[in-house]
Image (cartoon, rainbow, N blue to C red):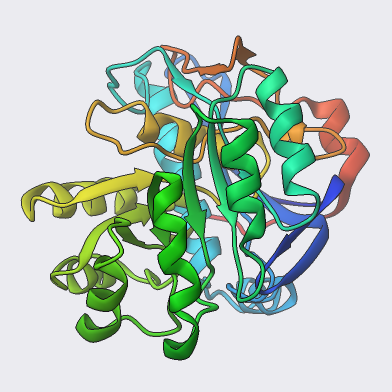
Length: 328
Protein backbone atom coordinates (compact mmCIF):
# COMPACT_ATOMS: atom_id res chain seq x y z
CA UNK A 1 0.00 0.00 0.00
CA UNK A 2 1.31 3.44 -0.97
CA UNK A 3 0.55 6.54 1.09
CA UNK A 4 1.23 9.70 -0.91
CA UNK A 5 2.07 12.59 1.40
CA UNK A 6 2.77 16.26 0.84
CA UNK A 7 4.45 18.01 3.79
CA UNK A 8 5.65 21.65 3.85
CA UNK A 9 9.16 22.41 5.07
CA UNK A 10 9.66 24.89 7.89
CA UNK A 11 12.37 26.68 5.87
CA UNK A 12 13.12 26.46 2.12
CA UNK A 13 15.95 24.01 1.44
CA UNK A 14 18.16 25.39 -1.32
CA UNK A 15 20.97 23.50 -3.05
CA UNK A 16 23.03 24.13 -6.18
CA UNK A 17 20.19 22.51 -8.12
CA UNK A 18 17.31 24.64 -6.84
CA UNK A 19 15.00 25.28 -3.90
CA UNK A 20 12.55 22.91 -2.20
CA UNK A 21 9.69 24.27 -0.07
CA UNK A 22 7.74 21.05 0.48
CA UNK A 23 8.37 17.33 0.17
CA UNK A 24 6.13 14.91 -1.67
CA UNK A 25 6.89 11.34 -0.64
CA UNK A 26 5.37 7.87 -0.76
CA UNK A 27 5.31 5.74 2.36
CA UNK A 28 5.26 2.07 1.37
CA UNK A 29 3.40 -0.21 3.78
CA UNK A 30 4.10 -3.93 3.41
CA UNK A 31 1.24 -5.88 4.98
CA UNK A 32 1.59 -9.23 6.71
CA UNK A 33 0.54 -11.17 9.78
CA UNK A 34 2.41 -13.01 12.49
CA UNK A 35 2.02 -16.64 13.53
CA UNK A 36 -0.96 -15.75 15.69
CA UNK A 37 -2.76 -14.17 12.76
CA UNK A 38 -2.28 -10.60 14.02
CA UNK A 39 -1.60 -7.98 11.31
CA UNK A 40 1.85 -6.45 11.06
CA UNK A 41 3.21 -3.75 8.76
CA UNK A 42 6.71 -2.99 7.53
CA UNK A 43 7.49 0.52 6.31
CA UNK A 44 9.68 2.09 3.64
CA UNK A 45 9.79 5.45 1.90
CA UNK A 46 10.16 6.62 -1.68
CA UNK A 47 11.30 10.25 -1.61
CA UNK A 48 12.72 11.14 -5.06
CA UNK A 49 14.61 14.41 -4.71
CA UNK A 50 13.65 17.09 -7.27
CA UNK A 51 16.20 17.38 -10.04
CA UNK A 52 18.11 14.28 -8.97
CA UNK A 53 15.64 11.39 -9.07
CA UNK A 54 12.62 10.44 -11.15
CA UNK A 55 9.60 12.80 -10.85
CA UNK A 56 6.82 11.57 -8.57
CA UNK A 57 4.32 11.43 -11.44
CA UNK A 58 6.65 9.17 -13.42
CA UNK A 59 7.10 6.95 -10.37
CA UNK A 60 3.33 6.59 -9.92
CA UNK A 61 2.68 6.05 -13.62
CA UNK A 62 5.23 3.25 -13.71
CA UNK A 63 3.89 1.72 -10.50
CA UNK A 64 0.34 1.54 -11.81
CA UNK A 65 1.74 -0.28 -14.87
CA UNK A 66 3.46 -2.83 -12.68
CA UNK A 67 6.97 -1.38 -12.98
CA UNK A 68 9.17 -0.03 -10.21
CA UNK A 69 11.38 3.03 -10.60
CA UNK A 70 14.64 3.27 -8.64
CA UNK A 71 13.30 4.97 -5.53
CA UNK A 72 10.08 2.94 -5.44
CA UNK A 73 12.03 -0.32 -5.74
CA UNK A 74 14.26 0.86 -2.88
CA UNK A 75 11.25 1.73 -0.73
CA UNK A 76 9.57 -1.63 -1.36
CA UNK A 77 12.81 -3.36 -0.39
CA UNK A 78 12.91 -1.28 2.81
CA UNK A 79 9.33 -2.14 3.69
CA UNK A 80 9.73 -5.86 2.99
CA UNK A 81 12.99 -5.99 4.97
CA UNK A 82 11.34 -4.19 7.88
CA UNK A 83 8.31 -6.51 7.77
CA UNK A 84 10.49 -9.65 7.69
CA UNK A 85 12.45 -8.45 10.73
CA UNK A 86 9.25 -7.64 12.64
CA UNK A 87 7.78 -11.04 11.81
CA UNK A 88 10.99 -12.64 13.09
CA UNK A 89 10.98 -10.50 16.24
CA UNK A 90 14.49 -9.22 15.45
CA UNK A 91 16.01 -5.73 14.96
CA UNK A 92 16.60 -4.90 11.31
CA UNK A 93 20.32 -4.42 12.01
CA UNK A 94 22.70 -5.46 14.77
CA UNK A 95 24.48 -2.16 15.37
CA UNK A 96 27.18 -1.10 17.78
CA UNK A 97 25.65 2.15 19.01
CA UNK A 98 22.35 2.82 20.75
CA UNK A 99 22.50 6.45 19.55
CA UNK A 100 24.22 8.43 16.80
CA UNK A 101 25.21 12.13 16.82
CA UNK A 102 22.96 14.47 14.88
CA UNK A 103 24.59 15.87 11.74
CA UNK A 104 22.64 18.69 10.11
CA UNK A 105 22.55 19.15 6.34
CA UNK A 106 22.21 22.90 5.76
CA UNK A 107 20.99 24.36 2.48
CA UNK A 108 22.03 27.69 0.98
CA UNK A 109 19.17 29.58 2.65
CA UNK A 110 20.45 31.34 5.80
CA UNK A 111 23.02 28.63 6.57
CA UNK A 112 24.88 30.65 9.23
CA UNK A 113 21.74 31.34 11.28
CA UNK A 114 20.61 27.73 10.85
CA UNK A 115 24.00 26.44 12.02
CA UNK A 116 23.94 28.62 15.14
CA UNK A 117 20.39 27.51 15.92
CA UNK A 118 21.36 23.85 15.54
CA UNK A 119 24.44 24.33 17.74
CA UNK A 120 22.16 25.56 20.52
CA UNK A 121 20.38 22.20 20.28
CA UNK A 122 23.65 20.36 20.85
CA UNK A 123 24.59 19.72 17.21
CA UNK A 124 28.30 19.74 16.41
CA UNK A 125 28.31 18.07 12.96
CA UNK A 126 27.23 19.79 9.75
CA UNK A 127 27.08 19.18 6.01
CA UNK A 128 27.03 22.50 4.18
CA UNK A 129 25.70 22.89 0.66
CA UNK A 130 28.03 24.85 -1.62
CA UNK A 131 27.79 26.02 -5.22
CA UNK A 132 29.93 28.07 -7.62
CA UNK A 133 30.17 31.57 -6.15
CA UNK A 134 28.46 30.46 -2.94
CA UNK A 135 31.14 29.29 -0.52
CA UNK A 136 31.68 32.25 1.83
CA UNK A 137 29.38 30.80 4.49
CA UNK A 138 31.85 27.96 5.07
CA UNK A 139 34.43 30.33 6.59
CA UNK A 140 31.74 32.18 8.53
CA UNK A 141 30.38 29.00 10.11
CA UNK A 142 33.87 27.77 10.92
CA UNK A 143 34.49 31.11 12.66
CA UNK A 144 31.40 30.94 14.89
CA UNK A 145 31.69 27.14 15.45
CA UNK A 146 35.45 26.50 15.65
CA UNK A 147 35.12 22.95 17.00
CA UNK A 148 32.36 21.71 14.68
CA UNK A 149 32.84 18.88 12.20
CA UNK A 150 32.13 20.33 8.75
CA UNK A 151 31.55 18.46 5.50
CA UNK A 152 30.53 19.94 2.14
CA UNK A 153 28.11 18.93 -0.60
CA UNK A 154 28.43 20.50 -4.04
CA UNK A 155 25.68 18.48 -5.76
CA UNK A 156 27.70 18.08 -8.99
CA UNK A 157 27.82 21.84 -9.59
CA UNK A 158 31.50 22.71 -10.18
CA UNK A 159 33.15 22.67 -13.60
CA UNK A 160 36.89 22.23 -14.19
CA UNK A 161 37.34 26.00 -14.39
CA UNK A 162 35.57 26.50 -11.04
CA UNK A 163 37.40 23.87 -8.99
CA UNK A 164 39.79 26.54 -7.73
CA UNK A 165 36.96 27.99 -5.62
CA UNK A 166 37.10 24.84 -3.48
CA UNK A 167 40.83 24.78 -2.89
CA UNK A 168 40.81 27.58 -0.34
CA UNK A 169 38.17 25.80 1.76
CA UNK A 170 40.60 23.12 2.91
CA UNK A 171 42.10 25.54 5.46
CA UNK A 172 38.78 25.45 7.32
CA UNK A 173 39.36 21.83 8.35
CA UNK A 174 36.85 20.20 6.01
CA UNK A 175 36.12 16.54 6.81
CA UNK A 176 34.89 15.62 3.30
CA UNK A 177 33.26 16.98 0.17
CA UNK A 178 30.52 15.18 -1.77
CA UNK A 179 29.92 15.28 -5.51
CA UNK A 180 31.95 18.30 -6.56
CA UNK A 181 31.85 17.41 -10.30
CA UNK A 182 29.28 16.70 -12.95
CA UNK A 183 31.32 13.66 -14.02
CA UNK A 184 33.86 11.75 -11.96
CA UNK A 185 37.23 10.95 -13.49
CA UNK A 186 40.74 10.46 -12.18
CA UNK A 187 42.00 13.75 -13.58
CA UNK A 188 39.39 16.03 -11.99
CA UNK A 189 39.27 14.07 -8.75
CA UNK A 190 43.05 14.09 -8.53
CA UNK A 191 43.21 17.87 -8.93
CA UNK A 192 40.78 18.45 -6.07
CA UNK A 193 42.32 15.74 -3.91
CA UNK A 194 45.53 17.77 -3.94
CA UNK A 195 43.72 20.35 -1.81
CA UNK A 196 43.57 17.77 0.98
CA UNK A 197 39.78 17.35 1.25
CA UNK A 198 38.55 13.71 1.18
CA UNK A 199 36.25 13.13 -1.83
CA UNK A 200 32.99 11.17 -1.54
CA UNK A 201 30.66 10.06 -4.33
CA UNK A 202 26.94 10.54 -3.67
CA UNK A 203 24.24 11.03 -6.31
CA UNK A 204 26.52 9.50 -8.95
CA UNK A 205 25.54 6.21 -7.29
CA UNK A 206 22.34 5.24 -9.11
CA UNK A 207 22.92 1.48 -9.01
CA UNK A 208 24.93 -0.91 -6.88
CA UNK A 209 27.51 -1.33 -9.67
CA UNK A 210 28.36 2.36 -9.36
CA UNK A 211 29.75 1.83 -5.85
CA UNK A 212 32.69 -0.33 -6.93
CA UNK A 213 33.21 1.67 -10.16
CA UNK A 214 33.65 4.94 -8.26
CA UNK A 215 35.64 3.49 -5.37
CA UNK A 216 38.18 2.11 -7.85
CA UNK A 217 39.12 5.69 -8.76
CA UNK A 218 42.30 6.40 -6.78
CA UNK A 219 41.29 9.90 -5.70
CA UNK A 220 37.83 8.88 -4.42
CA UNK A 221 38.06 8.32 -0.67
CA UNK A 222 34.58 6.96 -0.06
CA UNK A 223 30.90 6.71 -0.93
CA UNK A 224 27.73 8.10 0.56
CA UNK A 225 25.20 5.28 0.79
CA UNK A 226 21.50 6.13 0.58
CA UNK A 227 18.96 3.40 1.41
CA UNK A 228 16.42 5.61 -0.37
CA UNK A 229 18.17 4.82 -3.67
CA UNK A 230 19.66 1.38 -3.09
CA UNK A 231 17.10 -0.09 -0.69
CA UNK A 232 18.11 -1.71 2.60
CA UNK A 233 19.48 -4.83 0.91
CA UNK A 234 21.50 -2.78 -1.58
CA UNK A 235 22.78 -0.45 1.13
CA UNK A 236 24.20 -3.37 3.10
CA UNK A 237 25.84 -4.72 -0.05
CA UNK A 238 27.35 -1.28 -0.74
CA UNK A 239 28.82 -1.23 2.77
CA UNK A 240 30.46 -4.60 2.18
CA UNK A 241 31.86 -3.42 -1.16
CA UNK A 242 33.45 -0.35 0.47
CA UNK A 243 34.90 -2.50 3.24
CA UNK A 244 36.34 -5.00 0.78
CA UNK A 245 38.07 -2.21 -1.16
CA UNK A 246 39.42 -0.57 1.98
CA UNK A 247 37.50 2.66 1.35
CA UNK A 248 35.31 4.79 3.62
CA UNK A 249 31.53 4.95 3.58
CA UNK A 250 28.88 7.13 5.17
CA UNK A 251 25.09 7.05 5.36
CA UNK A 252 22.67 9.70 4.12
CA UNK A 253 19.12 10.23 2.93
CA UNK A 254 16.93 12.21 0.54
CA UNK A 255 15.28 14.76 2.85
CA UNK A 256 12.78 12.13 3.95
CA UNK A 257 10.38 11.73 6.84
CA UNK A 258 11.38 9.71 9.89
CA UNK A 259 10.39 6.50 8.09
CA UNK A 260 13.13 6.82 5.46
CA UNK A 261 15.54 8.32 7.99
CA UNK A 262 15.25 5.27 10.25
CA UNK A 263 17.24 3.23 7.70
CA UNK A 264 19.94 5.91 7.50
CA UNK A 265 20.13 5.95 11.30
CA UNK A 266 20.67 2.20 11.42
CA UNK A 267 23.48 2.38 8.87
CA UNK A 268 25.11 5.30 10.69
CA UNK A 269 25.13 3.34 13.95
CA UNK A 270 27.72 0.86 12.62
CA UNK A 271 31.20 1.17 14.08
CA UNK A 272 32.99 1.88 10.81
CA UNK A 273 30.54 4.45 9.43
CA UNK A 274 32.15 7.77 8.54
CA UNK A 275 30.25 10.80 9.98
CA UNK A 276 26.78 10.49 8.45
CA UNK A 277 23.74 12.67 7.76
CA UNK A 278 21.55 11.93 10.76
CA UNK A 279 18.95 14.47 11.85
CA UNK A 280 15.27 14.37 12.88
CA UNK A 281 12.80 15.20 10.13
CA UNK A 282 10.88 17.37 12.61
CA UNK A 283 13.73 19.92 12.35
CA UNK A 284 12.99 20.35 8.62
CA UNK A 285 9.33 19.37 8.16
CA UNK A 286 6.19 21.10 9.39
CA UNK A 287 5.56 17.79 11.18
CA UNK A 288 7.15 14.35 11.02
CA UNK A 289 5.07 11.20 10.69
CA UNK A 290 7.01 9.44 13.47
CA UNK A 291 7.96 10.42 17.01
CA UNK A 292 11.22 12.33 17.49
CA UNK A 293 13.90 10.23 19.23
CA UNK A 294 16.45 13.04 19.62
CA UNK A 295 18.07 13.43 23.05
CA UNK A 296 20.95 15.82 23.80
CA UNK A 297 22.12 16.08 20.19
CA UNK A 298 21.86 12.34 19.48
CA UNK A 299 19.20 10.16 17.85
CA UNK A 300 18.32 6.98 19.69
CA UNK A 301 18.46 3.73 17.72
CA UNK A 302 15.91 1.41 19.36
CA UNK A 303 16.76 -2.27 19.84
CA UNK A 304 13.29 -3.50 18.87
CA UNK A 305 11.95 -5.64 15.99
CA UNK A 306 12.38 -4.09 12.54
CA UNK A 307 13.29 -0.41 12.42
CA UNK A 308 11.22 0.33 15.50
CA UNK A 309 9.42 3.07 13.55
CA UNK A 310 5.63 3.23 13.23
CA UNK A 311 3.91 6.24 11.60
CA UNK A 312 1.46 8.17 13.73
CA UNK A 313 -1.85 7.59 11.97
CA UNK A 314 -3.25 11.05 12.80
CA UNK A 315 -0.24 12.71 11.15
CA UNK A 316 -0.41 10.28 8.23
CA UNK A 317 -4.06 11.19 7.69
CA UNK A 318 -3.29 14.92 7.94
CA UNK A 319 -0.77 14.99 5.09
CA UNK A 320 -2.02 12.13 2.89
CA UNK A 321 -3.18 13.33 -0.53
CA UNK A 322 -3.77 9.90 -2.09
CA UNK A 323 -3.51 6.18 -1.40
CA UNK A 324 -2.78 3.32 -3.81
CA UNK A 325 -2.93 -0.45 -3.55
CA UNK A 326 -0.15 -2.32 -5.36
CA UNK A 327 -1.23 -5.82 -4.37
CA UNK A 328 1.06 -8.77 -3.80
